[in-house]
Length: 311
Image 1 (cartoon, rainbow, N blue to C red):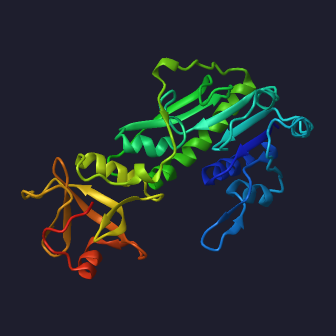
Image 2 (cartoon, helix red, strand yellow):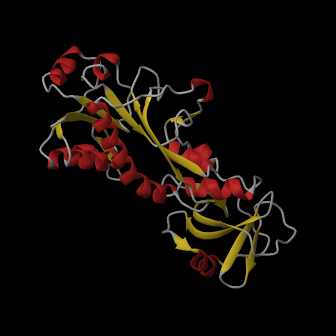
Image 3 (cartoon, helix red, strand yellow):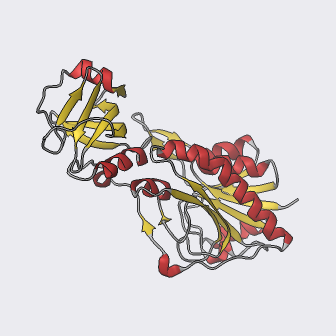
């Protein structure tokens, strides 16, 4: 049976690890350090560590991947291949070149597009209609290795990042297993990436997450769905922080002459916010220090007045 060493941290990595454990001999896992989370700052282990402990797999959380002692420790496992899924740290050559089949990384984009952090969110922010899974052989540069497998899928215009991840995960697990088997059989034909076509994406900051109602409706809608379930797209209303979780593009309503950010209602159950090009309908919203609510709940509780503005 193929021996696998696994590097990963969040839930998507945990699910890939769980899938691998059912098909191959996973000899160790490497994950990020435990971190304090939540209001009580309770120290929590990573999803990958939780899974590894459930499967009785050795777990390492090194501070320095270049430590010679850590390298010696991994060599003792004699793994055939290393698999990396959202580990969160660049892996040095002395580690990724160790196994006989090399080290593969699953990246949820059509490389060379969207190298780096948050590729799923950025694909939605930019209104992409298709994306995919790339499994690459790791090299020393970020997401620039030769492609073992790449598969596409269509993106619906209303899907959220959370919904897209739910669809991606089983697809990603299949791609990782297919890449392992191809490399082990000797039938893999890795393809070099076109580095001249590479694009890069960074982490989602608070500034990026702020809604600008003077932009196009499509841009606002895409930002909202890209940042659901986290961190959430935000704006201000009545001088308080507010998050908007779900919107719809305005296709069936006559739009009055208003300033950008200004609200208008249609009947008793729907409300819209004017944008640069038309308007967006608000479907789910969360006022500061309150739970997520529907548009109807928000209208009933806030007593909106014509002319009020979201900014």
